[in-house]
Length: 194
Image 1 (cartoon, one colour):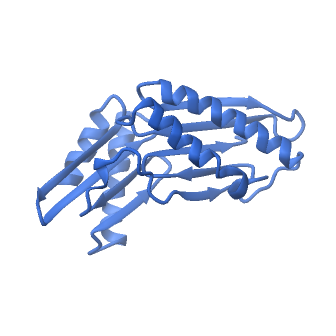
Image 2 (image 1 turned 90 degrees about the horizontal axis):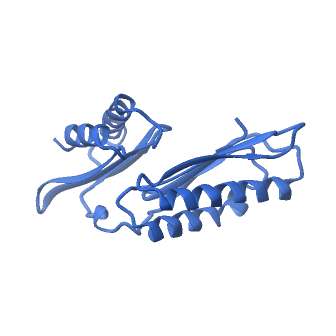
Image 3 (image 1 turned 30 degrees about the horizontal axis):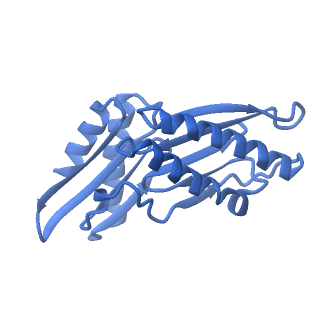
């Protein structure tokens, strides 16, 4: 029931986001789904539906599951995690396996500038989504592309704070990588050289 409702609600939402619950205590399920801010409604609905199916197959009998895809992410639980918009959970870190050939410090600094600028825009935008580009090294990595996103139910300040906290983890986790992402339940970012 919740899978059907969230898929429909996320794909029909202007912000491609939905959360909800079904049941009564002690048998209640809470869920949240967020699609990339530049996805279309059809792709969003399909991604959320597939995420629910994958969670039910891969995490059968689990009361708490999270699925991350490029186009969306989904979490469901028997715990009311949707009540707080400031709990980002335990973010996961994914990195591009290729390293930059340019000076690492300069590349990392350019990524930080890009992600902080797109974070400012995402926090100020009602969709809580932003993309951007940063020119870099004309010979090796001419452009860095970035994406930042928060769940649209977050306040502007909470969104910016959430993104700031995961961006601050970037130098330790993704330094010198040509691309990477940190995905939390409430906010995420990605950067790549393509």
